[in-house]
Image 1 (spheres, rainbow, N blue to C red):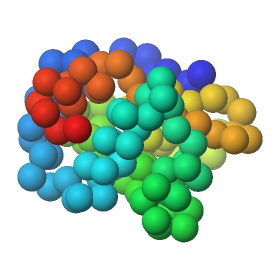
Image 2: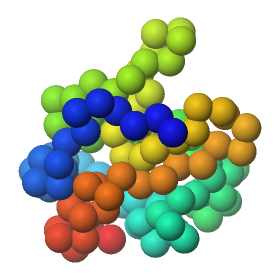
Image 3: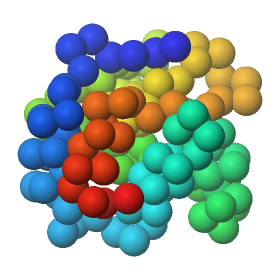
Length: 119
């Protein structure tokens, strides 16, 4: 699983979520809620896309949400071999193998979402 080094704690996530809370779209809040409430807080991108009714655009939207959260945390996640950041990785673990890719929400983020009553 891909887990960033020096992942923020739940207090840092709470502070960042409070900074961006008013800028989160309904879709972004729904993505967080879907992953939070999924079995073992794990969901595939195709299942998320289906739940959102957005025909496969969940990867892009989840990455943009991760970028927004990363900026609020002043945190840079790991990079792909092509040098691009894996923005989703600030919110979730993911396998190194991209076949049937599934996200698993970081417990620190889950705790922050629950404490802020955002889910």
